[in-house]
Amino acid sequence: MTASSISIVLATHNGAAFLGEQLESLLSQSLPPLEIVVGDDASTDDTLAILNSFASRSKVPIRVHRNLPGLGFRENFLDCCSHAKGEWIAFCDQDDVWHPQKLATCAQHFGREGVVMVTHAAHLIDAQGKTIGRFRQGIDSDATKPPLAYDPWSTFWGFSLVFKRRLLDLCSSDGRFVDYIAPRHKIAHDRWVCFLAQCVGNTVELAQPLAGYRQHGANAFGAGDKRARNIRKETVERHRHYVAATERMLDIVESMPAWAEHEFPAFDRARAYAFFSAALAQLKARSAVYEKSRGGGVVQAARNFIDGSYADVRSGRMRWRSLWRDVIYCASPGKR
Image (cartoon, rainbow, N blue to C red):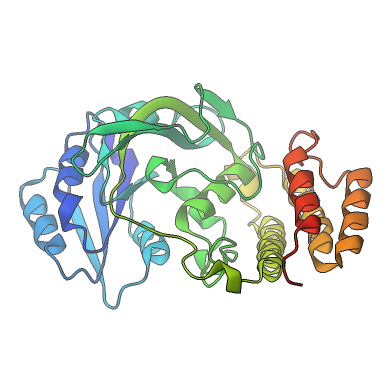
């Protein structure tokens, strides 16, 4: 595998605190990339100065595209991909640290039949770069997973992904589905690529930690007075977003270009459509639990159990946690 195969796509926004260390790790790769393509989202700190300094002495071309106003990290990453020239793209966050062998290790799998994406485990590091744990992402050993091996709504974190650039030609990013986690936005760059990859090809999982995933700051979720929240209403709305996203997944599979089967021989359009259709049917069956009265929800959950709506669409195994969650929901005293 040559350096001309890989573009690093780096999204920045006021990242001066850790950006220099990350850039050093990129330029120290045992397999240098073709280029580092940077999308900067209107930084007001020293981010641009750091990028320019590294670009002036780097043997690897560093190209910076500045977004004024900022696009937000989702669009920034995907817009940056449109400027990449490599056959493979590696997403890169501004505050992590890559191990020197990351690209070389991932590249060993690029030539394998049907492989369209490589992902890996990582070390957790603190603000000073000290290792504080392991980030496995559910990867316990090296493995190669075939198409449709993952939950329809799961993902691997962007910093761990190296993927075929051609995946992004399967569907315009403007047409991607709603982000069911943050429905004001379209789906994030990493979830989008994971969806496309698992539709059409094989994914290589590497248990070896190949990056330091930095933990810093104090982020809080769910702030506010929980007593004022309508948990039942929120649950109904959340499932509606999942349903809308999955309906769009079906549309995308159906409308993928005719060349997809030739370009990605592992892609089975009919099987992929059936896979996401089954996932959608299960979502709608579970949504019916949340939209009914408490007693009606219990009856609906029982029907779902009998007709197999709690079976994993990948393996057919019973998803006991989902059933238990719905039962608890029906028994909870929250508002309707």
